[in-house]
Length: 337
Image 1 (cartoon, rainbow, N blue to C red):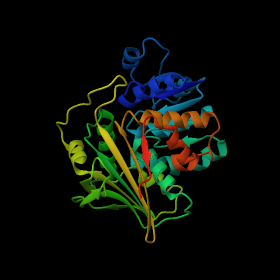
Image 2: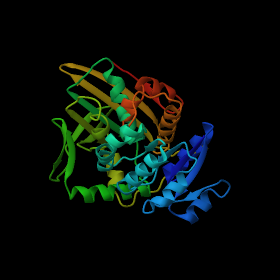
Image 3: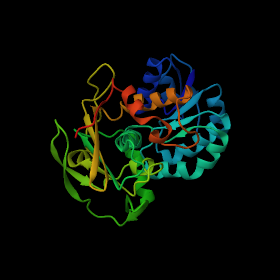
Image 4: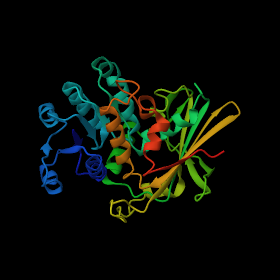
């Protein structure tokens, strides 16, 4: 089946195109820049489309079985592409890490996507999707919990141009405020230094300084289906410093798949009363791993291995433990005591 990839010539988009090919799908590269599309995909059919031109999106999606949006800022691209997917009657998935863009997708399209019977899966990537799958897995047979903590241990963070552009849009929307999920809702607070804490990651990281309230898309995906009033995310201080620095070097490929040397640990703890449950995922390159995450999701949607339809996060629409097992070639997932 043909799967459209909007933003296919971007850093993550190229990984997604390659992963689709490996899984036996026919990728259809889409993008706004005709020259970049032609340079990256001269050997295959590709289509130019713009989020400012709905008719171009309709033409671009003709014949596609699903569309994956890899083009940020998602505050600009998600809405028009979801609209186009609904018109075409095909599933929509994206790799958005933007909190507000993901929140908007749930708010704007839940009823319409449900009525149309069209799956819409936002944040199906490292930030938002993976954390949601891990939290859902950690919950197990619990129907509710008091807290969910997602700690990101990155060896480094060399942001892509798309990450930086999306971050700028998010900061502008927040007008200098910070965002957190507490007491069952998103809360915006005046800026200031993030709290600095210590997090005891499993080996090989060990105890590392982290920034608390370094809020990621998990605060949208997890509460969208799990009754957890406190969802908190953390980032290793060194990685946060890399992200903030204006002179962080660009990503460098170190293997035949094009992955960088960056490694990651995602340490998830959920608590109910005095009882805690923990799940840990480890792997290489947060951008590259988004490709098997979203392509596995595409495959499950197109083969009917879903639990619900409409707008849904990864943990709600898929069998989370089974999904993580399917990624064994890309992720190591453990449940330490």
